[in-house]
Image 1 (cartoon, rainbow, N blue to C red):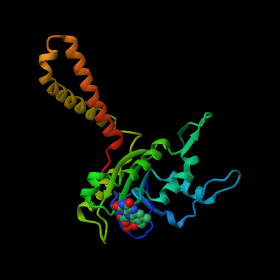
Image 2: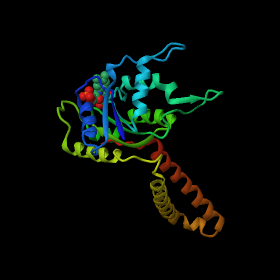
Image 3: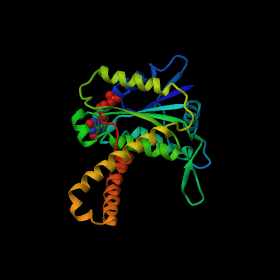
Image 4: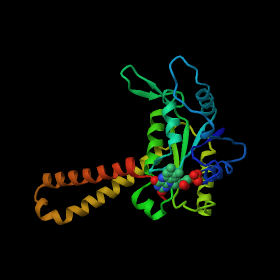
Length: 253
Ligand SMILES: Cc1cc2nc3c(=O)[nH]c(=O)nc-3n(C[C@H](O)[C@H](O)[C@H](O)COP(=O)(O)O)c2cc1C
């Protein structure tokens, strides 16, 4: 079992580096770890017919690891350029192309990843405005195309002037360290998803029936009106919550 930390910050020993080591230094005994600092590599795109030894070396490192931990700060409300460049140059290694240009997951399918980011804005501002969301979204988009499975997110807002990461964040890093130390078979969160879906449906049905109470004088007389209003309200609520859970929800504190 091996975990590869990928540090994509301008600072080799800054907050992102600390967050990454806090995870990697606390994995279970026997789990091998390695950290690569992307700024040490001259990462350029693959040119046709030319060998690209840097990309080949990185591909080998990615291949040897079971879990990848991306540690990249949020720059300009986006993923740091160095990680984005790494993703751009790795595209032909991450995905296979079909004849029509569509992509399917490539050689790294079913590996796992953890994302870590940080930003200057305060926890409250990040909670309200989601400054770090785009960083997570970009990582998720690329990893989903590559068929790599997500294990979680760690975010540290309020890093302006910070010299050392706070204890509560260290504890969170330790929890993730334990989580990613266990070898997983493909995507094993199916049961969790069914349980979440059950509770979502239960809550949506409750809210729908609550909204229907004041409508009773108009709809109670007809079974079909009752049914139609329930279906419409339920559909709108469920669409909103599914959108939130799938596209919007990222860790912000
Ligand atoms: C080029 C650049 C752009 C940044 N943009 C933002 C930003 O848009 N919002 C923010 O809250 N912090 C921003 N920051 C602050 C970083 O997110 C923050 O310094 C981060 O915690 C850096 O981690 P480090 O110590 O590993 O460099 C930016 C920093 C740099 C260098």
